[in-house]
Each structure stands twice: as structure tokens, then as C-alpha cells.
Amino acid sequence: MGFAFIALITGSGLLGCNKTEKVRYKSGEERPGGQTSATVSGRNAFSLPSANMAVSRRLDFSVGNSFFRNPWVAAPASTKARDGLGPLFNTNGCQNCHIKDGRGHAPEDGQLNRVSMLVRISIPPSSPDQKLLPHQGVIPHPVYGEQLQDFTLPGGVAEGRVRVNYKYHDVKFQDGETVELRTPVISIEEPGYGPLSSDNNGNIMMSARIAPPMIGLGLLEAISECDLLANEDIDDKNNDGISGRANRVWDVEQEKTVIGRFGWKAGQPTLKQQNAAAFNGDMGLTTSLFMDENCTASQKRCHEQMAGAHPEVSDNILDKVTFYSQNLAVPVRANAKDKTVLAGKQLFYDAGCIACHTPSFTIGSAAAKEQADQKIWPYTDLLLHDMGAGLADHRPEFLANGNEWRTPPLWGIGHSQVVDKTAGFLHDGRARTLIEAILWHDGEAAKSKQRVLAMSASERNALIHFVESL
Image (cartoon, rainbow, N blue to C red; front, side):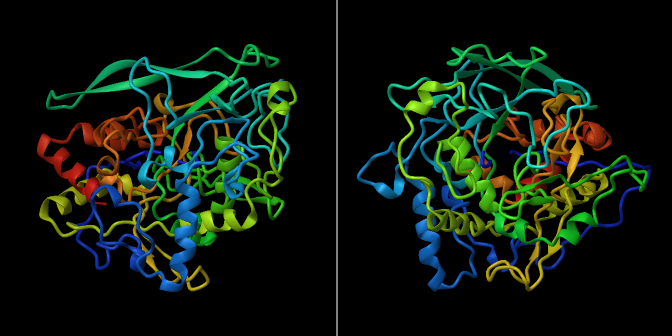
């Protein structure tokens, strides 16, 4: 959603016969977000501001929170600051998907989607030679655009209803224990504007996405481009089976191609643009970055219902929401020195997970006040990696192909199902537990997964304790 996934839980790495060197606790690890980290637990674990935020800046955070949390309404309305919703939309408020600033979840087997998941759509090129323009991450569906909106204002026509069914299979550990995995099968019912398979090839690309957690985003935005690119290995020159690469995406304000950082495929370059895109695609709200309503030329009823000023979200509100999303704090780790956690950390390193889930970065002094000069522990490289056929959505986005996903940060992940007990993992919420998420890893992560499959029950327990401790 805007964000947004889950998260891909372990990374990948080439497993040799020898283990890594002894892994120990490192000073500062208990504060994953550096001095921004908040001492908090429970349902509000993801909802506190940066701990080092000056009192004078807390008002801006609170204002951003109010526009993030409260619902938007149709125009015209007496609440002018919050009108303009729709005509087509997925939700009327950010918190409906990012529940308590955390991650979303997928519907149960056979159920219709109830807000916390959305479906991105596009069509393949009409010929192998067709090239996208620099600002195009995908080729929009000619009738339904780039995202299916399953709600509409009264009197309108929604684009369809999303239903999720699952196929199930078991994965067995070497000690005989099994884990059930589920594969979502997405179907679109009651399409409001004609058949979806209306492109030149009779095909449509669909990708279900749940909302990722909101914590630590300003810190990820502040990591230097040089530090991110230092981890690129596009041609696998290290010969370790890992070939991460940065996505290159369109920056609307700069009008040029830059590195992508946000979204499940790193399709957005900045938090401001990520938020503006979510306002537009998820709620049908225009901003100075995206001035067009999300109605396509074929959707006559949608055009008839347009109302409200343009942009519907002022720059001031967009800036306040962006400040809020930059400063949701990562929780302090309560048990970073625990013996079982440290044993799990050793196993995490031995399995090669840090080849993608880079443990730490240092942010320089040029960043914003709260984020400047921080040593952070996000466990991500923000790069694209091939995660295998099982997780593939077969839908490219800028440079990302249908098998590739951005390595998500792991910080705070152990709080996810405390913040919201229904929270799921991976981009489409298919994984109900962390071990399920690990077992979906393949492609560049295949050897790491095999190492996990070979672990004893006590080793798996330690590994999960470590990941939950982050």
C-alpha cells in the first residue's frame, strides 16, 4: 500500500562447509533506529515518534498523524481539509490498511478482500520491442489503470471485487516436522467496466499487496545512495549466488530517474512520492505530484462523479503526513543480549541471510534532524533479489522483473502480531508465521532455506527468537 510487506524474512547466501566467525552482540544493537528508537511495546509499538524529536516538532507529527489516521470524505463537505475522496478508491483512510501503523493482512480462504490488501494490475508489452517511457514503471490496463479500486462513492461503479482462495502444500524439515504453506489465488468478480483481459495479448498481470509497516522509513530514506550501491552485485561478481540490484524509478519532482527505495519492488524513490501515490491510487485523492484522478478515459461514471478542488490534498497536508511517516520510531530491542537470541543470530549469519538482510548502516550529518548521525540496524539492503518462482508475481515494475522483490527491513517484526494479531508476512500476506515466510524463500535464497530445513527444532526456535527480537 503505500505502502505497505511483508516482509521477505530471511535473505540468501551461499552455504559452504564452514560457518561464519563467532557472532556476538555489538554495542548499540538494542537501539535499531539509533537515538530515534522508542522504548515501547504492545499495540502501540509502531505509533510513537522518534525518541530524539524536539518538543517543537511534535505538533507537526501530531498533525500528520491526524490526517493519516482519520477518514477522508467525498466532496463537497464541511470538512474541507479532508474532502475529495474517490470517486474510485480502496480505502478512506491510511490507518485502515496500515493498522496501528503496522502491516496489513490477506483475507481468509474464500473471502472477499476487506481493505487491507490491494491488487496492482497492468498488461504486458504488445510486442517484444515495445519500450516503456522513463516515467512508466508498468503499462497500465487501458480500462482499469494500474490498480483495481474495489470501492466507489454512492451511485458510482466499483472496478470489481477481489476474492482470495488458497492452495495448500506441506514443506518438511529434515527432522520430519512439517509446515503448511498456502498460495493465494486471486480472482476479480463483478468487473464494473468490462472484461479485464482486454489488452492486445488477452492477458493481464495481477499482483496482490498488503500494507507494509510504517516504522523507520525516514531512516531508510536517509541511507546514502553510495552505501546502497556498494551492496549491488548485478552480475554476481562475488560468485555467491546473490546478485542484488537497485531499482531505477521516476522521481516526479526531479523529473529524472533515480534509485527506488519504497514499495515491495522499490518502485518509489521518496516518502513524499510514496505518500502522494498512495493518496492517489488508494483513496482517489489528488496532490501536486499526481494531479489526475484515478479514472481512466473509459470510466464515464467515474468522470461524472469528480468533485472537489485540485489538488485535493494540499502541499501542507502532504508535507505533514510525510513528516509523520518519516518519524514513526522503531522499538528498542528488549532482549538483544539474550543467549537464545544470540544463538539464533549465529544461525542467521551462518545461513547467509545477511547477504541480503544487511544488518547496519551509518547515516551522515546531512540528513534531517532526527535521522542525522545515527547508526541503524534495519537488516535490509533495499535492493532487488530474485526470490524464485513460488513468490513470483510475473509483473515487472521499472527494472524489477516478475521474480524480484526488494529486501524488506526486519526491524520491529516481532511486534507485528502484537500490534495486530491478523498481520501477515510477505508481499501478499500469504505467510501466517515467520517460519512460513522463511520457507517461501527461493531463487537467490534457496541455499539459505536449505540450511534452515536442515536445522534441528531447537535451532529453528533460536532462529525465530532472533528474528522476533529485531
